[in-house]
Length: 125
Image 1 (cartoon, one colour):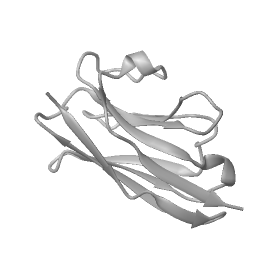
Image 2: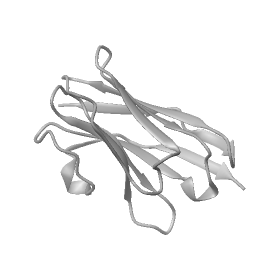
Image 3: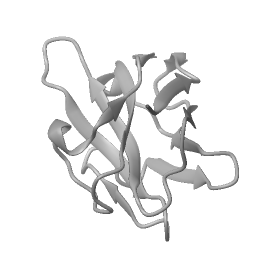
C-alpha cells in the first residue's frame, strides 16, 4: 500500500514560515489527490489544502488561503505545503493525506484513503 512520510515541522515565531513536505512511496498518484489536514488541541481535525496530481488544481481552507501554498513534484512523488505569515492558531499536528479512488478534492476525512503519521507545527505568539 501507499506510505506517506511528512517532514519539515517545528517551532516558529508568529509571522514566520515553514515548509512541510510529504514523500509518497508504493505507487504514483497521477490523476488522484494529495493534501493536508491538521489537528489542533481541543479542536476537530480540519482540512487545510489539497492538490490534484494531474493538472495541479488546488483547493484551500479559508484559514489557509493567501498564506499557504501547496505544490507537487511529479517526478519525485513529493508534495509540499509552504506556510507563510504563520499565526499561533496554526499550531497543530499536520497530516499528509492521499487518495487513489477519485480525482476530485474533498474536504472531509473520509475523502482520503491514506494518512501519514503527522508532524508538529508550533507557532509562538
